[in-house]
Image 1 (cartoon, rainbow, N blue to C red):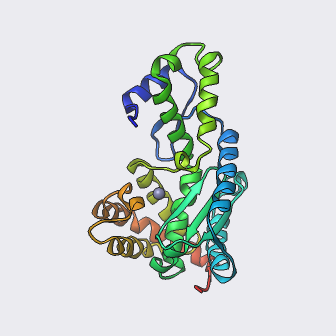
Image 2 (tube, helix red, strand yellow):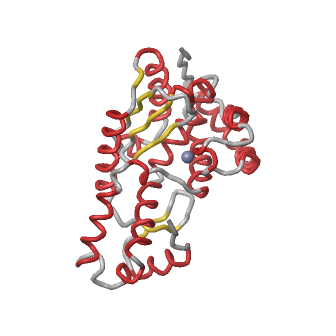
Length: 267
Ligand SMILES: [Zn+2]
């Protein structure tokens, strides 16, 4: 799949009222509405749950406890805007995902690699910020624009006429969860940055993010899991996290003083 370039996104942004700014200030294409994406996320999550074995009991309580603490630390409008749900799936690969609408999954394999609540919070915080940053909308929109061709979209009637119907058809295909997953390094860096501050705001030790990605990297050995290979290189990621650690630690201290001291027992 060829992606349209940032330059083409810029050109589209001049002709369409379908652009937004990401939380870190990038201009990007968002053709679908939040409500459309949330609906796609709900469908994909339902389908995913039917296809994969789920785990209840203490692993679910553990993951739920961490997710609840993170969601509580969000500003009210973000907390209420999504239908936050998280489930544990029996799967040895160390993986987690988030779908638009706030639907998240964590594999049992990840619970081995994340060795305490703070490390788990680093992953779940990262996933929550993928949702809040609307990365899926950006991915679907960019991919759809690529499929339809820029000419259809840039024509004035593009979204109202035939192009609009094509767009809706393409978005329907997006209900498959694969297309909803954030898969670019830009998205990963953004989720790392925002996720680090979110975990700190919730009272989880942000330094655990470094240990978590270290464990992930060690587990991957010479060939990192597919999920990791779409993520930033380990060295780059560590450098980016360290560059923001002072601010994250200050936020962590403030959260602890405000009584945010999550205590989620690892099963
Ligand atoms: Zn990610």
